[in-house]
Length: 356
Image (cartoon, rainbow, N blue to C red; front, top):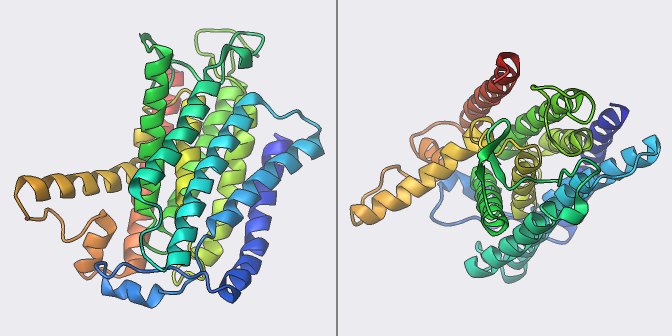
């Protein structure tokens, strides 16, 4: 538990102080955000805002985790190292995307195929290692499971290893891109991520307290390294919370794809490693709705040969074009995210109480 407190507080402190330094460096190098011409005109004032702020979040989380492990003299677990690999790996893909935007002065960075290849490579390596028998603990538990899960694994929904890796790939790509789509207004993705990662920190703490490795019983959780995953979830919560100080409207810095892809990947990784894959659809409901708005817009546009379901997608921009103030949209979307998180945690706890 001490490591959890250390991880969260160190990451919070590092982003609060480190982001200010990053802003100065990025401004000096003219690493500013480029704005799409087809977006809301109110966004043109954000042109030149320092981007790639996700680097501060990534460094803060990695530093906070290993510092907490060093102070408590605990050995990092396989699950935690895999989650950090996914987090940093997707962050690297996002960094390349952001850097190309700045270097070539265009609003689109990596080509779509290149970005997909990068995400796929990182996700497949993560999935393969997470199911590798060599990384199983003394109870035979690998970091991830080939079984599809909601709050616990469904034994009847066991997938072959190859299909399980494909399922993880779809989850990771969907969540990282969903976070990327959400990151369109100042503080929206950062504030929502703070709530969702805090929820997973609580899930991990609860799973550790009721772990089958500690107390056998019908209600125990067969999850590998839940306490160590809670340290990373706490660090992610603290890092996002600290970054929000600088990212809130009007944003002094933008996380960019560096931050959105890494945070989305970490969210999917936590769901996979905690055996709560389908629960993520509820806890991360805001990201799901925003992603669906883009899918629906594209599908409706193609089906009706040019008509639009929303004024603009993702969904937050639709409300901007309706005349809603940016701060109003962000706060109301935060409320929706909070309700999704509360609903997901309620279902998680209710399942344990019911004992089903």
